[in-house]
Every structure is written in C-alpha cells, then in structure tokens.
Length: 390
Image (cartoon, rainbow, N blue to C red; front, side):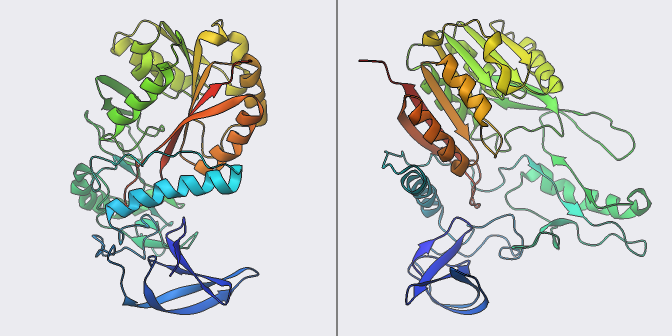
C-alpha cells in the first residue's frame, strides 16, 4: 500500500494502475479482491492484512468498517494528525500550485467521547416495526447499520441511547416516513419528543463564554477543543492591530463573542434571523456590549459596515460549499486588512484561496485543527493578509 486517501482508503499501484482498498495503511501488504474497474482506477475489498503497519491499531468500535461514521480508528492518533496536516499540504500544492508552510494539526483534548451531538436515522416502519437505528453503512447512501453505542459520542449520549431507542421502537405509529433522532449533550436539560418540545434550547461553553441555541441549530460538536480553537482565531484576527471585526456566517455568535474582548467593535452577520437573535441573546447573557448582529445575506453585508477597511479584520466560516463569487467580490471591494478563513472543507477553501491570492492577499498562516478524531474530517484555519502597495 502506498498512500492514505482522504476517504481512509489506501491506494496501491499495479503497473501504474491505482487500486483503492479500504481500511488499509501505507506500507502494509494485504490480500484484496477487486470488485469494480473504473476509467482511472479500481475499487477493491480488503480480504486480509498480511503484513500490518506499525501504526495499525485495533479499532475501539466493533462496527468500524461497517459504520460509515469513522474512517481512522485503525490508525494511531499521532499518525491521524500527521495525515491531516499532510492532507492540507497536498491540497495547497495540487489545487493552488503552491508549497506553503502548514503547522502541525492541533489535537483534540479528547479522542473518544467528544461529540456533543449525533443524529441516528431509521427507515419508515414496515409491518409495524422499526428496523435499524443508526448511521449509513460505509460506502452506502441508503442502507443503515444498527448502532447501540457510539464511542466518539459523549458519555451522556451513550447513557441515554438504550432508553431512547426503546422508546422510539415503542412509538412506531408516530412515524410514517424515514426519520432522524437528534441526540445532543448539554449543560442544561433538554428533552424533546415528536409531540411536545419540553425545551428546545441547549447550552454549552467555549472558554469563558456561554452559548444558548436551538437544539437543532448548527454548533461545533466538539466542545473540548473550542477554547483552543476560538483562542487561535482570536489571536490571529487581532494580530495585525485591527480595531474592528466582521464575523460573516456568525451563527449564534461563536467567533463574534469569543473574539469581542480583542476588538473595539464587532459586527456579526447571519442569514438566519433566528440565529442572529440567539447571537444577540448570547451577547446579553455574557454581558458583551461591543458586539452587534445583523440578519442579512453574507453576500450583501459590507454596504452596512461602517468600519474602516484598513482597521478591520474579517472572520469567515462558510458552509462546506465555501464562499460564492458574489460574497468574495464584495469582500475584496471592502478590502479588509486581515481575513481569517475557517473551513470544515479544505478543498473548497483552497478553491477560494485562489481568488484571495488574485485579489492581493498573501497567506500568513495555515493551521489545521482536529475537531473530529477517528474520522477523515478536519477544520482548517487560514490567515490571509492584504498586501500593501509598495
């Protein structure tokens, strides 16, 4: 086996032909069976590991390889971090055509039991019964694997899973279609069933800041790394001496409020009025008076920003699809001195980076964070500085 692929399939070459084999590691000798030939490569099933890598571990979950949730449980955590760092380096080289310095991925304080939210699925009942309750089978888009316990979920979630699964199956008549359960650990008390939401609000801390938000809303699912994560973004956003901060895609205020102490004024922008309202509530909850929040499309925010561009840093944390051209054009027209780009999808981040370089920005720092141990996913923080005319 030659190289670890992003999907946690290793790839090998046979006379120049690439073969992808899941759950293998570089340097291993394996027995595999090819089941599909594509135009540029083949797909194979792993039959047996003949000579294992010294980095191979026994997976902690008996469903590893069946459940599609984790890809790296068989790889030592040190090597997981090294691979995620290398992944960003290779994307920079292959997609942008540059070799930039990438700092080593910052590890999660917890490698297991870190997820504060999971969403098991199940198909609509058949013959009056609910079948598997869990996650997608690896490599499948519709078939599920039954998950009784998830080792990357927080203990509070796993403690409640048996009761919730039992109650769900006992309430079969309530479900006419496929459904998804929302299980979220919170510092407060949340109980929600299909009929009566007892409480829709959850609470979590990021360092000294407490956040309240709706249980179904997006919020980073690894609370244990949030202090280091938001602290790094705060230090980088303020490093250029900017007095003002614009937080695009601000959600319920994670970066706006965690960074507010570094700036004279903060403006958070969120397309969802509900999320913007929660950001305002969180500012009030934490007695932060220098942050305001606008409900507006991220593509139309800078006309409402009165800050001087030369004294402004911008934090952007877009969805997986990245930033669209309209947003980037408005951002470049505004011309902030410093941009901190946070991304859960480094591939779209690299695509957007090309536009930043063309618009007169340079890379100041690239820092991966491992918010998702045992999986292929990561967060990448890229710091971009506007080049001053000579």
